[in-house]
Image (cartoon, rainbow, N blue to C red):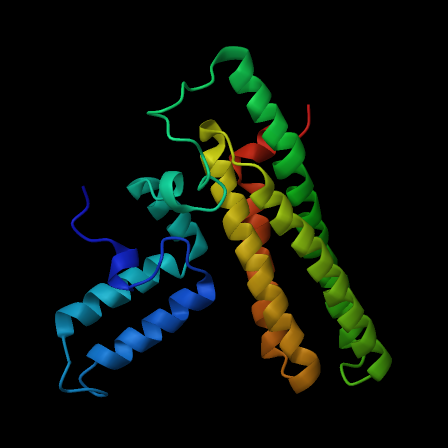
Length: 227
């Protein structure tokens, strides 16, 4: 049993998005920091908040932390609808293998394909845009690219919710879940560029896509993607 839980420290749900984590962190720091609110200042609480944010704001650390505390098996959407093992007999042998194959075929493989398509196409889009970031035609083409990516992301999100993952593939499901979040947040960042021409949004979006690709590359399911 863990004495401290980073999610409880930040007062967020276990499946909170990156944006929700950042928002909670800022709110709590403002509440407990002595420079902003002396009435509720708490040095020990600030230390706990910073420690929690350091882990949960880093995707790789968060994946490891969730596995460590068993968070993924109980709270995330991919497994949230799983039947209670105390009430049902766990599938074994051939049935378990069939469920693994079904999830890989209907969920993991198409999502991996859609996300890889989104992530791998960004570099060329940025190269095209770099020719003249203020060119209206290039901006329009970039907007079309974002729209196409959103369509693929929506399909991926729908597929992710369509079928609970087998227990043996919980880690693969976790990697997909966080990769989906990274791509979603990355697209939001990229979408700010046409309105502001601030290339920091491009750099942030690119970094989020890099993390998503890393999650996909190191997902355990990637070794069983195709047979």
